[in-house]
Image 1 (cartoon, rainbow, N blue to C red):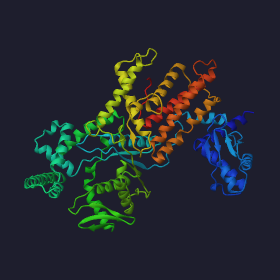
Image 2 (tube, helix red, strand yellow):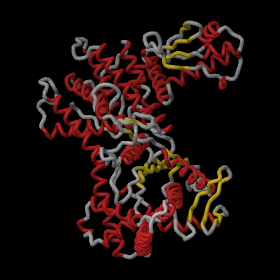
Image 3 (cartoon, rainbow, N blue to C red):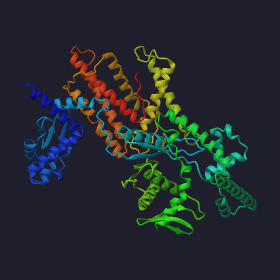
Image 4 (spheres, rainbow, N blue to C red):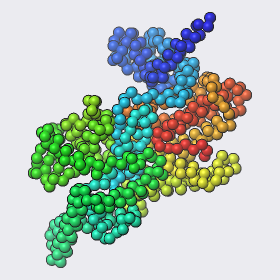
Length: 627
C-alpha cells in the first residue's frame, strides 16, 4: 500500500523538474499545438494556438484564441473547432479540463496542486532561476569615462544600464567583464597635460576643477581659427581682424605642436610624463569612484581598460586589415570599405595617426580572443549607432567576431536616449551647462532622505525610533533607487523626462513603491514568526494570482537578458508588487486563527519578498528592511 504514494511522489518530482525548466505558457501552447495538429491533420509546428494570460483571472489563468483564425483558414466553425480541441487536448495533471467560451476561446486553468508543487520547487536558494548553459564570458562596455572631465547624465545611463545587464548575466552564472573604456590617451589628453605643465600646476595636489579648467582652456587655445578667417573675408572685415586671426592661428598651431610633442614623449615611454599622466587619471577616477559608490554599481579600478591599454595594439590592427586585403590606401590613409554603403571606416590617418575606430577594433579583438566573450555589448548612446555598425561589420569581415573555440560572438550595441528636462530638451542646469552626475545624485539623496524623515515623525512608523544616521542610509537607498528605477523602467532607446517628484513617490510604478512594499513584507514576516518548512496551501484567487506571477520569474529574467531590456524586469517587479498588495488585502495573515493557513501565507509572502529583493539587486537597487 505504501508503494503507490512513493511512486506518485517520484513521478511528481520528475514532472516538477520538467515544468520548472519550461515556460508554463509554452507548455500549454505545445499541448494545444499537438491537439490542433491532430484535429486539422496538419504539422503542429506550423500552428500558433495564440496563448495569452486571461484578462479575468477569476475565470481562467490562460486563454487560447487560435481556433478563431485556424477555423476560418481551414473551413471550420471556430467554436466547433475549439470544442474538438478541448475534447482531445491532453494537459495531463498540469491543468483542469479546459472550457470553450464565446465564439471559440479556450479557457485554461492550472490546477491548485500543480501551482502549489511548482511554488514549493521554486522556494529554494536559487528561487527557480536556471543557470545559462553558455559557459563563455560576456564583455560589457559601459560608463565610458573621459579623463579630465566630470561625469554627466549620459554617464548615468551608460553605467546603470550596463551594470544591470551585467548583474543579470551574473545571476544566471555567466562570467562578466565590465569594461570601462576610459578616454585616457591621445592628443586631447596630451593637450590637457601640456596645459597643466606649462601653467605650473602642482599635479600632486591636483583637483577635478583644475582638470576641468585645463581641459576647456586646451580646447579653446588649440582650436583652429581658419573658419574665423573665412568668415572675416565674407564679412569684408578690416586688416586689424585678419592680423588678430593670424595671431590666433599661430597660437593654436603652437599649442597643437606643443601637445603633439607631449604625446610623442608619452608614446615613447617618457617616465616622468607617464607619471604625470597617471596623476590626471588618478584625480579623475577618484571623483568618479565616489559617484559610482553612491550609485551602488559594481564598477571599480579593476574594470578600467582604456584607450591607453590598446595603444600598442593599434598598428597591428591596421597591419592585419592591410595584409588580409581588407584595408585599402586612400590618399595616404587606410580605410575599410563595405559593399552595402558608401562610407568606409577610416582606421589610419594619412599622417599615420589612429582613430577611435582603430581602438574599438582592437578592443573587439581583445574581448573575443583573449577574454573569450561570445557576447560583446556596448552600452553607448544612440547617436553612435552608425559608428558601431561600421566597426562591427569590419570586425566580421576579418573574423574577429569569433572566440578561440570558433564560436561566433554576438556584437551588440545597446543604444539609449537622452534624459530630458521639463522643457523636453536635454537636461541642463539653469545656466545652460550640462548637469553633473554628482549634483543629480545628491539631489536624489536629499529628496529621499527628506521623505524618510517626514515619515519617521509618524508615531506608528517603523522608522520612528531610528537614529539620524540610519534614516540617512535609508534616504540614500530610496533616492538612488528612485533614479535608477526611473531610468531602467523606460524603454532604453527612448528619451525620458527627469521628474524628481514622480521618481521619489511611494505610489505608482516607482522604485520607492517597490522598496516600500518589500519593507512591509519584511515587517509582516517579523511579526508573523517562523514559517520555514510550512506546508503551502494555495486555494484563494489572490493566492493563485500571486503564485502564478512568482512562477514567471525565471522566464522574465531570461527574456530580459535575451533582449537586453532591464525594463522587462522592472515592469514584472511592479506587477508582482501589485499582486502581493491584492493578496494581502484579500487574504488575512496575522489575524488568522488557522495556523496552517497562516504559516502557508507567511511562507508565500516571504518567497515574494526574497524574489523582490533578488530582482531589485539585479537593477542595482537596495531593499531597506524598514521604511
